[in-house]
Length: 228
Image 1 (cartoon, rainbow, N blue to C red):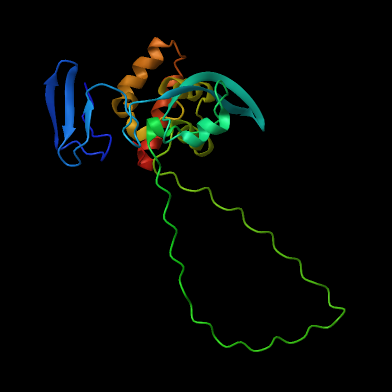
Image 2: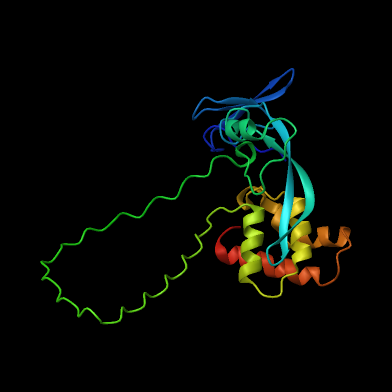
């Protein structure tokens, strides 16, 4: 099944196709963008040119210890991913956790909460403390909460689930992240995250019977978060 979503405006309700010698050319009547059906396009700018760079899949199996469990080729857009291409150079590894804009588009920055103004009341000078009075201990600052994820990548969703759900099998989640692509966003995977598809994959991969329980917990948790 072909995706008829316009890579320029993201809509699919006003796309029409025209047969040509090279295949079917799709045109969005909303923004006039045109592209060939079936070809891979940048999710940010709609360009067809891409550059592949290697990236490691790294997990924390114990404490602060890092372990490389897989390798993948990630497509980058020469225009939208220009900075990371310049920083790494040909043949170099992409930083762990970098999200390709060619594959996932540009994530919008969360809007900052408006600052509320409060009327300042007149203050009286505080009484002067005695010289030899012991200074009170300053309470420790509370740790800042983890920012909420709205459209996470597979890697971000797996890491968050391991921290929030008890009893998940890290090995099964690592294999799942390698299969789906660690930098792919959950919103782009569609039926690949259905319970039937995941159960069939676990059977084909000859995973232990306990994998079904982990995958069922994972899908339920991601649904409760509104990620799928």
